[in-house]
Image 1 (cartoon, rainbow, N blue to C red):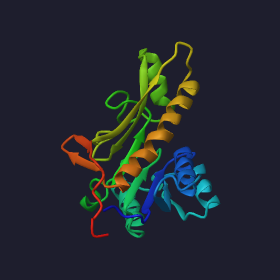
Image 2 (image 1 turned 90 degrees about the horizontal axis):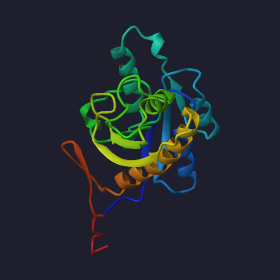
Image 3 (image 1 turned 180 degrees about the vertical axis):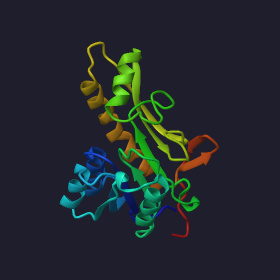
Image 4 (image 1 turned 60 degrees about the vertical axis):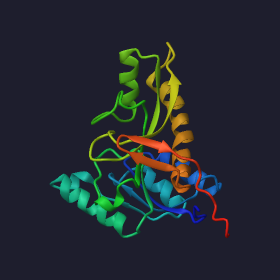
Length: 217
């Protein structure tokens, strides 16, 4: 039997926080079973921090350039996550590797603005992705939600949604349609997680039938 209690979530971001806003909207409308308990930014001036504070969500920043090493930076991130004991960690335009302990295996998700394994990896974020898609001349791109592992965009894929590339697309017009796909599949992946319907088997994520209700209930 799945719990009706909202998932305690931490959101990590680096920029404007459009993905965060979508998750906040979904939470407030009761369309996604989450409670965002902390927002963490890698940039002190990220507008995502203002979005969080506007909705009374505790927010904190750890500026990467303030740290001599990535290890020290990651250590402070992990400490800030551990303090609130989340059920699920959601990356939302977070531009650095984040590696907590093994206790979070299978409990970290990311959304990427392309169909992984295409146009992904280190340096492939935001408009860099859409510019690369247009430069290569592909006809289909999209959005991917995946679990996070030790690499950039290499974790098991949960959901994908295709987006057609038009001949007259610019990075901005393409980004708008890809972001619409992201807004659809990220909350859906979270709902599946909350319903205990995701099973990681090697590189594959299987979506299983809903658990049967306890007949004694």
